[in-house]
Image: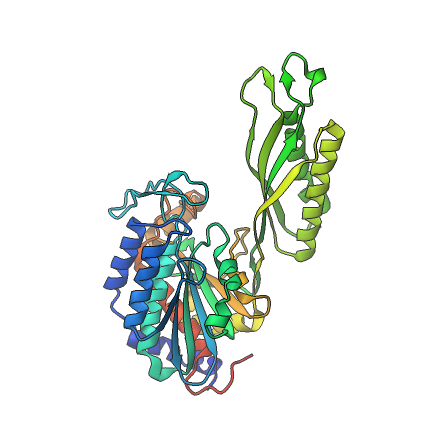
Length: 431
């Protein structure tokens, strides 16, 4: 048997349907995580919840690989080593959903020491609940597959450090090195929909904090000063031409100035301005070209303006693009289509970013897909009225995935994707 044979006759869905756990405990776990979210680098209770659950299902548990992580390993004979990943951290956002299990929590953010409201506005609580349910299903169905299943619950995704930190802490010296990786993300699509595509699907990310310097003084004497506000304004406006004039028309890139701070009074010219940049792209050549253009523009504008100091440009975050392996994506799509039929769609690439590719270490193939989470009647109504873009999306205070059917579909998708490569009678993968 190979993965294609199994999905052709629907046997993967049959296996999953037979061994699905009761969903109620995972619904309660989801609601608990949503009501008591934890910021990046503070996911201790969520990590312990996942560890306790996996241990009860017979998984070997490893925790504390650079932060509040949980890895569960289920060895089940010879075969491929398949890693399923879910992220766990929440965002510093005040929830505005009016759900009965809405978060009212505040925490001290270890990134800056400030107290902030906390909300699962990116669906990581759903990711975690889905993987917990999938792990239960696959543990119960172990007579049908052979290989090693690795369930990785990752911390610290929202600040882009979790996957890199786990690799730096020797993740694959402490757990079996996987042959392939699988992951998913909830997305503002009709609940029940699963979307995937080979090639680039999430963009690379580069973020910077920039400080440009002027010569401060009294506003009525601008000739005796160098105004960093005007300088920063010229830089920010000029950067918008990088995409339109230096990126090939068929390529994609985006430059966003997300914040700008400078000065303290209307009659005082400041001595510096600080702003932040977020750059998104897919292709390595475009990424390199855009970054070079940004550095050149900042430095040139400072020189033209007579800035007394070299600008300070600090990289604050980065992530590689998510590029799905063509062969693995084909196999997973085949399994999904056999199981979910018309609910499988082609994924639309997004300029959102993810740290998941760091887990691949540059040489492990992976597939990353999205699952819809908008209540079907709400989605259908918005689609009919042309207001889909007005539905609360990721990182919104109003983001509220519907539990049914999102949780079941997400759990099934993870289990079916894993079984695609853990066939009991297989001797090799389709790769």
